[in-house]
Image (cartoon, rainbow, N blue to C red):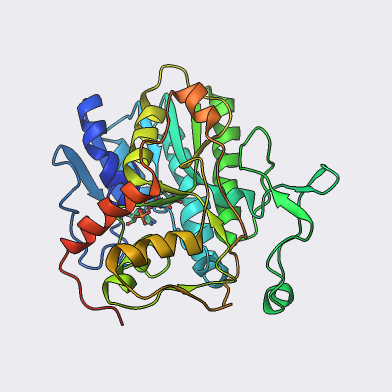
Length: 349
Ligand SMILES: NC(=O)c1ccc[n+]([C@@H]2O[C@H](COP(=O)([O-])OP(=O)(O)OC[C@H]3O[C@@H](n4cnc5c(N)ncnc54)[C@H](O)[C@@H]3O)[C@@H](O)[C@H]2O)c1
């Protein structure tokens, strides 16, 4: 597992350790996520942690001289959508070159695994597909700075289509999304050439216990909880009507584990989400009420690279992996809030 000390890796670590003889996590304990550079307490003790950067060939050489993995779960990535615009080299380096370094190392050591599971992202879809008033599906242009400054948030006279890889084509609108699509494509080409199974899971917005509370670029649900816990009114970007699909980490960990262990590897990307959307206003309102905080307020601010609406159609996950999400937003927020309460955290700035 790469990036195995992160949010998703830690959450799936016990299930993996139960299913596989040996589990090794390669992770550079990135300071943006791990400010103390320590092994996460929740990473299953049976998982061997190798601290190293996936971009470095020597890290792979050291690792692959010791272990030839049957299954690889590739999670290591730079994940900040907004940050990816100003730090595109870092994103491209880790996400794209980190992937190619890994694949080259497998070849160099004659250690190609049977299967590689990639945690891709709904960011590959960008604004996704929309249906016009005449019923025709089209792909809107990336929203420009000007349209956002004008508050023209939505695509006029059209409604968005749920994200499903067999229906909606990828069209990223962030550097992060472009690097995740590059990962998928590079892995796909390589895996088909060498007869390796490539399992691509496109995750929607994952949230829940264990997500870094220090990374300012990810984790909107944790941030909302912390704001509400501090008695603040949660600020809502755009008009608050942005739609997202929040899927609880427990459900995602189960999907990743199934991706690694299912007998027949799916051949097209599988969308993983709660299967329903929330507006940011609805999610924030639920959290504000949970904490007895003042009502959220609309700011009309926006963030470049953010898409207007995103949610997954999860029927393929059910058909192919036998996976369905188990938690709705209310249950997930309770789990998250309980976990945050148990952390010793500095007050929000
Ligand atoms: N969390 C989400 O909402 C979400 C949504 C869609 C896709 N994903 C994808 O899932 C994967 C894991 O995400 P996460 O939420 O667990 O993120 P995370 O930031 O918690 O974990 C990523 C881990 O990768 C490690 N890492 C970063 N750069 C590395 C490098 N160069 N070498 C080795 N390790 C490195 C970090 O130290 C961290 O432990 C990523 O590929 C991400 O793109 C996550």
